[in-house]
Length: 106
Image 1 (cartoon, one colour):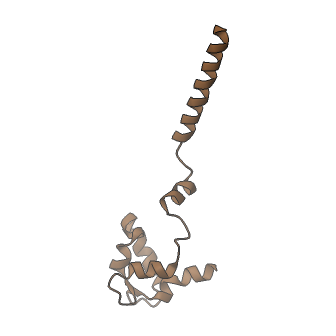
Image 2 (cartoon, one colour):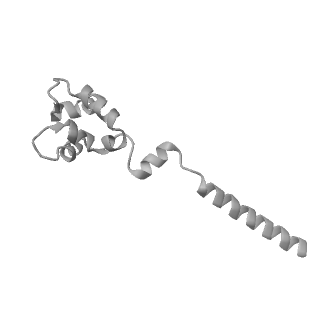
Image 3 (cartoon, helix red, strand yellow):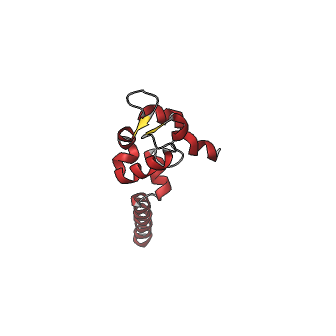
């Protein structure tokens, strides 16, 4: 009887430890990004454009772009992406320039 009780307790403890260890594992990068609401796609590009266009002038300046999520994370990368998107090199992104890549993917 004592041996059976010890076995049951040992199995229960093992199951608890295995479950706790599994919950403590970090999520895979895609899962972690999904939990944070990050990752691609970033949702509606028109909504993102409106959020980045903080002065509502119909275009996004480099400063507005760098104030966004990518600029906060990596300002140098944000500037590089901004320059690639700015096809007419006027120092601002029109709605068409900002959303062109998303439209190509559809």
